[in-house]
Length: 376
Image 1: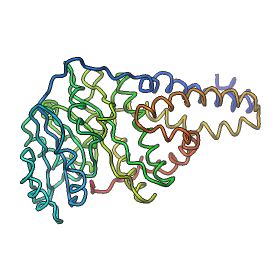
Image 2: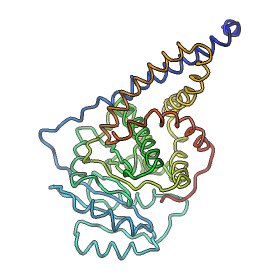
Image 3: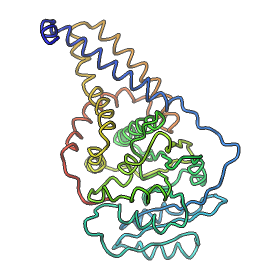
Image 4: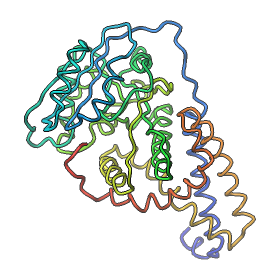
């Protein structure tokens, strides 16, 4: 077999590699990503109102809490619910701000932590304390810099719970702002969601985003919380979901009223640091998830270099292969972007797809770089 390949003209090898790469990409779009593109969120005729505990962890977030916390406190939800804010050793005016909120909103539950947990970096300690203090079985997580898209956020997210469901994955886009960087950030967020939401629909959930994530306390305590990942700065959302999510206990909710919106970074350097911190946890995913994500990323990375090479070898074949992927990808992006409220990005998707080659080059360092200790 090796001698057969060695005797093939190098031009043929390059063309075949390009074809195989395109087939891999088409497989992902046709097998996984179409599930999100054509997903129809089922409408419940009768919705059970589960008691819910919203949990927000904050460290020196007085400014963000002043702007965003009211969005969680004024939810229209007929059943029992509470909003827990875990104030983790803040040195700003967070404590005083929360005390003022408490005077108006009786469902606000404040947990003040005034010390660090030795050997547990990141947000896992305050989040664990928030889950421990929660009065209700269903917990709904978001961040201090996030605001629900509507007053029905709690209701829409808890609607995901059916018999056997223990995890509900939501979507948390970034706000639309002027400038190309904002579009890059929003496209990357969309592209990540296209993957983790599609894989969940395919029965292989591998991550969630802590800005909009819900699960049951029973599941958390049954798996001993974050005990296996306490030594890592991140992973309180994606690694926990990676460990406990199955094809039967996970559901997604992509109703626009169930989104939470965050403020995007204002410089490329800040965004790069944020992504390095986020991606540093992916090396600890289950082996099958790393292989699944790695194959997609690698085929995506080498697609354009192979396409350019093949234009000089046999441009007709190169254009045909490129066209098949382009049309498939365009259809999936068009429908998925509309579902996730990112329709304005569609006109730019082809440019962002080329950008992904450089994106992989920039963030490949996360495979070996040690993440920092901060979580906000």
